[in-house]
Amino acid sequence: MYAVILTLLTLTLQAAAERIAVTVPGCLQTSVADADAVISLSLEGEIDARDLSFIAAAMPSLRTLDLSRVRIVPFGDEPADHIPACSFAGSPLTDVKFPLDYPLSIGDMAFMGSDLTLLDLPPSVCQTGIGAFAGCPRLKEVVLTGKTILGAHAFADCNHLSVLRLNSVDSLPASAFSGCGNLKDIEGEYHLRHIGAKAFSACSALDNFDFGQRLSYIGDDAFTNSGLTVADMSPCTSLREISPWAFSHCSSLSSVILPPALTAVPEGLLFDAPGLFELSLPASVSDIADVALCTASALDSLALPAGLENIGTLAMNRLAALEVIDAGKLSAVPSLGDDVWDNVDCSSVRLIADVTLADVFAAADQWNAFNIMVHGSLSSAPAVNGDASVRLRIDGRRLIVSSPAGLKKVSVYDCSGRLLASGRSDKNEYYYDNDSGSALLLVETITADGGISSDKILIN
Image 1: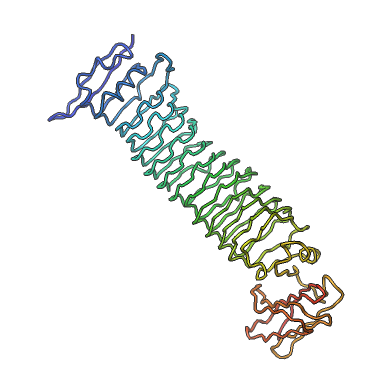
Image 2 (image 1 turned 90 degrees about the horizontal axis):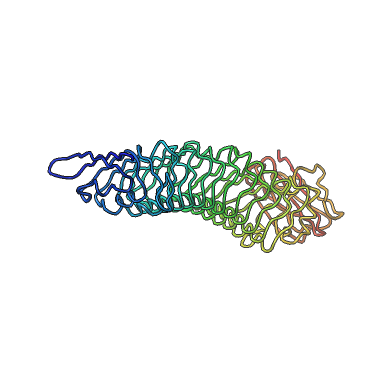
């Protein structure tokens, strides 16, 4: 026989406390004289599922429940050290202290929709079920330890949750904090190895996240529709794969640095990120999947990694601000899916290529729509494709470009790469009056026979 000692605070004209001993688990109801009036309850000893059910059903005024000195013993199908599923779902409880001396599991939806305001799960809580604390409308702060394994949707749709403390937490399950629109302050996230699918989806106030070097997995839609402004994954040396759509629909995302060992940019990774203007792709990337950057409409420059082999269908659709593609490190021209550059003004985009690939780009479907420039300076400015040569000379402040083969297109840039002038001509000469005052000009020329050349000229 085990004693259960209870402290009951009831609302009367004066605050009262009563101490009651119950000798048998499951008999708590026989020891409480006025269950409707109990506001705060502290238990000590051994209880079972019947007692938890009585607390939830028969104490409508209960706000504080202290189980820290309790052992939950088995009853029927309910095992020991377990809070049954849905036990306190929708409960008016605002504060709960959990048993400290034995490993505790919390069942599916056990506190879903309850009025908890702060939740500090001690190391004794080893596991929570699916949606254990989901939809708690008043929950503002959660403190977790690395010994707790969370179930999927554990804190989903807790709309007022703003503070999350992760004390050496290793893994977050699918939809762990999905829909927590006020979640902004996270501590200890750099310890994570695993971030499950949709773990932080629709966390619109979450503008910062510390991606640590231990991280090895990011699930599908993990941060979709979140408020992230910067995603710097450069410390994530163990992160070789990111799941599709992980950072999609992030309207505030402006800068992304992908992890150094990443081998592929997955499908839809940065889909609908209209504020993205800075993207760093690691050299290890060989594939950019379908719609990976679709609608990244603020991105004005793109440096292609040296080992890139393929770009998927609509991967770069609607890159309206794109001005420069740096393909100078490529050793081969990547294959393309369908409509990769759809809704991009390719003719106004400079594609910088190595001299050995310029003619290959110029002959390749979709690539040949760009304004192809030869990477580096060619002192004699020979044509890359064709027998004609190109001559540059200065007459006062005027640049004169000529070729006996005839000129198809001439583009003039300053030393920073800014386009100063561009023109098409079926004549042998092109003139540019250097009103910009630039002392050094870069001239890219396409001759009538398809020759491509680039050179620099100094105007004294």
